[in-house]
Length: 297
Ligand SMILES: [Zn+2]
Image (cartoon, rainbow, N blue to C red; front, side, top):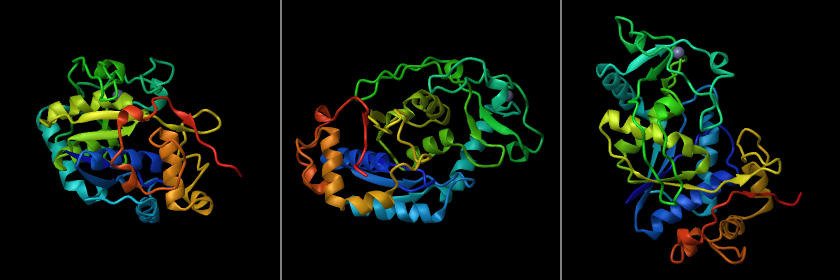
C-alpha cells in the first residue's frame, strides 16, 4: 500500500492542509504502508518556492514524516511524454474557447460550467502539440464511470458530458492538474488516494485519463472539509488561518490533538503526536460531515 499527500504550494499551510496531511499519513501508517509527499508547484503564476519550504516545515512541526518527497516541477519529462502519447492516440486538440464562452451554459458537478466539447475534432498543427498556444484538451471516451469511494461517496459520472473534456495543458504552457495528478500517481505506484471532498468531482475524469494512458486506478477516499465561518470551504486563497497564526496559537501536539478531536479520532483535544494516534486509527470513527473551524482571537 502506497499513498500520497499532494498539496499545492500556492500559499501558507492552513488547518485544512494539515488535517488532510494528518488523515493521509494516519491511513498509510495504520496499514503499514508508505506515504509520499508531493509538492504540486506547476502553476508558475501562483507558486512560490518559499511556500513549498514552509509547507514542508509545517508538516514536520505537526509531527509527520514521509518516505519520499517529489517536487512536481521536476516531472516535466514525464508530463510531456504523456502528452506525446495522447497526441499519438489522436486525443489532443486545441481549444480557443474562453471561460466567458461557457458561462450561462450547463452546470458541472464541481459547481463550474461544463465544457461542451465544442472544439473536438480541431486538428493539432503540423508541428504537434508543442506549437499550440491555446489550451490543449484531451478527448475522453464518452463512457459512464461507475465509482463509489472507500467512504461510500458515489463519484459516478459521465465525465465527457457532465464536466466536458479536461484541459491538460494550459495556454501558458503549464501542465494542468488533471493530467499531472494522474501521471504522477501512476509513476509513483500510488495504490491509495486520500484527499478532501472538494476534489471528488474530478475523480471520474481522472479515471478516464488513467484508462487512456493505460494506468491502474487507485482506491479513492474523500474526507470531510474544514469550513470557514462564511460556510465556504476553508481555502488557501482566503488566508483566514495561515500557518503563521496557527503556530503563534498552538504547538504541534496541541494542534494535532485538536485536529484529531475534530476529526472524531480522539474523544478529547488532548495534545498528542500523530504517531500516538496510529494504533487506534479507524475510518469508521472519522466524521463524515464537513465542519466549521474557528480559533478564538
Ligand atoms: Zn473549445
